[in-house]
Each structure stands twice: as C-alpha cells, then as structure tokens.
Image 1: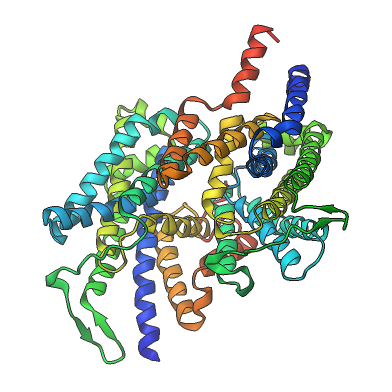
Image 2: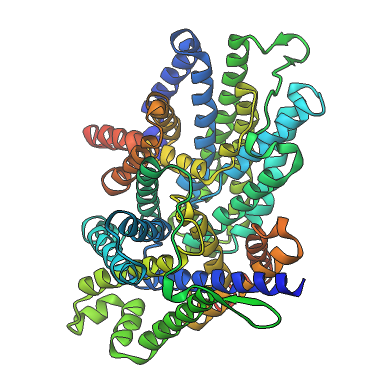
Length: 288
Length: 314
C-alpha cells in the first residue's frame, strides 16, 4: 500500500514539476508580451514529436533530442512571433489568446492527420534505465532524473530573472516596455527572444516527459488546460509562487489518484473553484 | 447611437433571415438546417457575453452540452414529455451558468477565459465518468416524442418548425436584452468598466446576469440539439465546441445582432462539406481562426455594417 502511495507521489511530483515549468513559461510570456500563449500546449506536443521523429527516422538519440528539439520548436516559435503574434501587440490580450488557439487547432490537426490518435512510445535512454529500491518504494532512475532536472531548470529561471542583468531587463519590460525602449534596449528583439525561449522550454520539458508518457497529438491540449488552472490558482505574480503552486498541485493530484482515482482528473479544477471563492486573486497573485 | 444607426439595415436583415428560415427545410436537408439554427442560437447567446459585455468565455460547451445530456436523460431515461425535457435542460444550464458565472466574474480579462475553460473541463470529466451518460458512446437513442401529445416530432418538418420557433424566441430574447437599458449598461461595462462602476452600476451583478442569460440560452440550444440528432456525445461538452462558438461569433461579427447566426451558418456548412477530410477540418478551422483574428476582426456583418455606414456617412 505504502509503495503505491509513494509511487503516485512520485508521479505527482513529476507532473507538478512540468506544471511549474509550463506555467512559468506562460507567466513570463504573458508578463512581457501580454499574450496568453494557448499554443504552449501544441508547442509542447511538437517538441515530443520532433524528438520521436528524430529517433524513429534519423536515429537521433535522447541526449541530442534534449538539445535539438527545443532548438527546432524555439525557432518555429520565433517565426510565429515575428510573422503573426507581433501584429496583435497593443490590442486586447484576448486576440492573442484566440490567435494562439487557432494555431493550436492547426498544429493539432496536422499531427492528428499524420499520426492518428494512438500513442507512440519513446524509450528511456540506456544511461538512465533501471531503478533503486529505497525500502519503502522502488525509484526508477529516470523519474528521479526528471524531477531533479525540472526543478533545476525552474530554479535556474528564477535565478536568471531575479539576479542577472537580462532578468532585470525582463522585469523592467514587464513593468513598462516603452520606458525600457527609451533607455536604448531593443525591446521588440527581447520580445522575440523571450517567446522563443519560453516555447523552447516547453519542448525541453516534453523531451524529458516523452519516455514517461505516450507521445500523442492531444498530449499538449490536455496539459495546457490544467496549466491554465494552475496559473489561475497561483496567480502570475511571482516566480517562486508559480513553482510552489505547480509542484504542490502535482502532489495533490498524486494523492487523489491514490485515495480516490475517479476524482484525479478534476481535483485541480475543483481547487481552482475553491481558490476563486476564498482568495480570488490567486494564492500568490496581486489584485489587478 | 449604434442601435439607432443600425436599425434600418438591421430590420431588412431580420426580414431576410426570417424568410430564409421559413423556406429552408424545403431547400436544404432539414437536419442540416436544424443544426444551423441550434448553433446559431448558441452563438447568439455567446455573443451576448463576448460582443456586448466584453467577456470571453472559453467554456460555453459546458452549457450546451450539459443541457443536451439532461434533456436527453429526462426524455429517454425518465420518459417524460419533450417540453419537460427542454425546460429541464435549459434550467440545468442556467443553474450551472449561475455557479460558473459567480466564480468566473471574480477575475477579469484573460483569467476569466481560463477559469471558464477550467470549469468546463470539470463538466467534461464528470460527463465522461457518470454512469448514465454512456461515457465514450454518448447518450444514444433519445426519442423525439410528441409536442403536447399532439404534434409528432419524428416528422422532420414538424421538428424543424419547432426548432425554428424556439430559435426565433431565443433570438428575440437576446435582441430585447441588447436593446434594453440593461443592454446599454452591458455595453458601458464592455467599453469602460471602471466608469460604469463609478456611475453607480453594480457591475458584477450585471455581468452575472448576462452570464446566466447567455448560459440559459446556450442550454436551450443544447436541449434542441439533442432532440434533433437524438443523441448527445462527448463532443457536445468538449473544449473544441467552446472554441468553435468563439469562431462563429468572430467570423460573423461580434457585437452585431445577426453576425453569430451568419458565422454559425458558415462554420456548419464548412464542417459539413469538409467532413470527409477528417483532421483537415480542424486545420482549416484553425486557419480561418488565424485569418479572422489577424485581418478580419470586425467579422462579416461588422464589415458590412462599417461599409454601409461609410457610404451613407452615418
């Protein structure tokens, strides 16, 4: 019994670290560009397919995929920002949401057409196969690796944003992009890079996720709904808050899966409703 | 000002729409025409929220879908009359609308969209897991029955004119809502919420009422839809449908009375003719979405209205 609980907690921790990574990406893009990137889910899914196609058709392995897939998806993101998203700056952010929603449909439809609904398995790299018996539970090495790397990436993002010059520009751009531009910073370029990096991070996350989950065309859409709820619960105010909320909700989901599996799909949405009742601005949000 | 300027061309538009609706079942396949009417009502109800109050709900499938399931179950499972089924479905959607609306109006802008999306997912997963909904198979074999025990609704023309009458009723409610002082307050909220608040309007109450009316009418559309097709499926509560209704409204023209109906007609026609292409329908829908957002934000009716206004320099 205790084995099952810890197993679910581990899955919850992994899911939670992905929630944290993605909601952080959404928050940074929204903060600077004022665009809700609905396509984050589709880009996540694309990252998985790039890795899977690379392995199946070209024999490109996991470690290269970890580098190449984010690069490829990031470039697609940069192109999107330059050609399409850029045209909506200054309009109501709802248009950005609708544009990226349309893009999501296009990408999802294309992959659905090419690969159907069935899942494609992605093997765990040889170096990280196997597991350790901790006594109270069996810990697959790969899963431990995913948790550690995700948390390192989250922490690294926090460090970059809070402690570096680049992060200072980013924070300044979030507050007042015009003033920043007046100081001679190339803000449009910063927007492009931020979007590209945000998208690339989603692809990085999914390459790590690929050996755990199946690679399917709908994997991104299902995730992005939950991530939106995570964003509502946590608020987009603070980075540490996003990480804490993401990981915490992943764990709650894991516990629910153990106690009452039927509710595991909805528990995060129920929590969202409760948070709206008790603390409408979100756990870490600022009222705006 | 807009209402006065738009009144005359609008009146002509209504007359044309009513006439088209009367002859439609003899020109096109009646089930197709009924589907258009149901979705036109759905989109018009949605437009009350997006076009007139400025609130983007991304979870309207929850209302049309849950009403479809409730009506289907009341008619099929409990064997109650069709009218009771329609009333039950609409009432249920209104209730869900009240609960979701009360939660969602606590946040504004994009959060509002995310919250409605999340709450609609809640309904989706409930429908997937409840024992009586039929899960992946959907709720099948819903009988159409008779209207007040007199009119046999299995006849396609009888069913069509019932749907048409209900559509006109719903459309009339929306029109009255928009044209009333209440509707003007909604527009004031859309244009400048702090100002509406400072003028003493209880903004949240108005938003909630608009949300509830919109949800109830969306539910009415769902109650009809389940009778037309005689089944309810997961696609009725899926987020794709929530996106489709945004597209219909955007394409036809948000904030115009007839726009959503025009959009519904176009999108249903598109889906109908492209049905054999499978996943390409999703791709094309997405592409239309992108084009609308980038180049065509006023929508078809909005563009026509702007053209008319410019040529008469109103």
